[in-house]
Amino acid sequence: MQSFQLNERASTVPPVLSYDREGWQQGYRSLKQEFDYWIDDIEGEIPADLQGTLFRNGPGMLDVNGHPIHHPFDGDGMICAITFANGRAHFHNRFVRTEGYVAEQAAGRILYRGVFGTQKPGGWLANAFDFRLKNIANTNVLYWGGKLLALWEAAEPHRLDPTTLETLGLDHLEGVLQAGEAFAAHPRIDPACYQDGGAPCLVNFSIKPGLSSTITLFEFDLNGTLRRKHAHSTPGFAFIHDFAITPNYAIFFQNPVSFNPLPYLMGKRGAAECITFQPEKTTRIVLIPRNTEGAGLGKDKGSTVKDRRPGSALTLQSLSFETHAGFVFHHANAFEDGDAIVIDSICYNSLPSVESDADFRQTDFDALDPGQLWRFRVDLKTQTVHRELLESRCCEFPYVNPANVGRPYRYVFMGAAHAADGNAPLQAITKVDLKTGQRELWSAAPSGYVSEPIFVPRFAGGAASTRDASDHSLSSTAVEGAEDDGWLLTLVYDATHQRSDVVILDARDLTQGPIARLHLKHHVPYGLHGSFTPHCFVDR
Ligand code: CO
Image 1 (cartoon, rainbow, N blue to C red):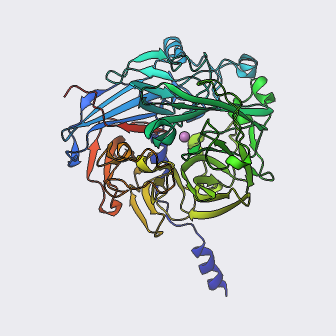
Image 2: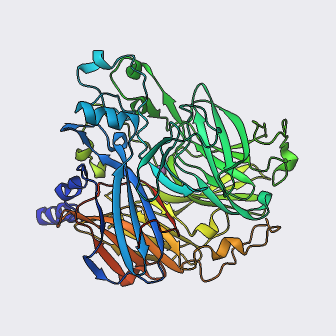
Image 3: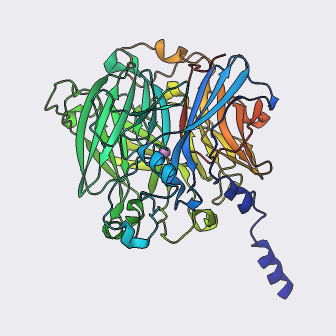
């Protein structure tokens, strides 16, 4: 009996971890140096037809002159550009010269409070009632309308020179934004906007949180000119990082949170540390019609246009639905299916509260809920929401073929944990076939830690331009080549060699391992988001 108990106890000992904490922590070191070189240490071969630039953004500075910041989300934005041209690759990184970065580097100390809890030295008295916002430009980077823009959701973009990565200054998008106005870090590109005759358009939003929150939607054409803008209010405090689009809707998940600003006002916590998840409440799904003429699905439910002047703030009727509590940072994709809107999102059971005295490097992964991929089906007729778990493995940073954004699609690519169960750092790239349920996994464990996988179609640019402009129905997935015909590009931190690799995977088959691993001369701290453009800016 006793030996049976011992065995049983032995079997509950957790399995050997796929990672070691020290190795994982090392990816959170500042990269202070700025590099500019052709990569010559390469395993495998760079595909000759892979041409263009992968831009990445993320916190490059985890300390200011040795004074650690409180959370990586407070780190100064650093842009990496990896250019692929004629079978070669070039690496370049530069910090965004934000006002705060320049001032703090000159002073050699922390001068600003961070949204995620970084405090100026001197205790709460030194921090109380300092409401200056440091625009750290660290979340995403995008080339659109001839501009390279570094994005951070609480303020306006910074514009950079795409060739030199030199900071050109704040950019207000030709007067669309006012000084200091928010512009989210998660733009979506509609590959064939029917309102614009089938041309691609960039859709983004801003949030003004409060007792009632305002969501403003922006749509820009290929030249970066504003085509549509309208504002909507939603009751309650809204903390929204990302959204999804379909041809007719912009979709927002208003997670159940409350905001108590007092510790922030008193200089004791960062603003984001004052947000508390409320599991007893529901998540509100908000659908905002994109069509400023009031057409599209849900028209009969009163999509009224109150102001049709182009570029002016319009008032369209939004729709809202309640679903299970949960926290969503990122959406994979959304599409329309008859009377339903389908949204696939990475959902957490709860939002962990950031403890003001905790070190993020000591994160207890086992104590936190993993992100998992869920499908939400909003039935516009019955006004109901049905949800279904698509992938239980811990995953984040979803990405789909750009030609399928807002359309029915088959494949989603994500960063994932090595193990099928539990919560752990992202060490693998997974591909889920939503049609067959098949999964593929490439893992960099035990010493590799992955970032967002960016899908680059083999025939970049071919799909969107050939689509029938009048076809804003729901099945325009016909593209040249299969949906997974392309590459996945991801940066992988290699803890063994304390450097990062640019990894190229064949998206058609992840199990064969990388086509090429490009060893950088240094590490790149764990980043956030990025994008690919077929343009090459490096002198070949
Ligand atoms: Co994000």
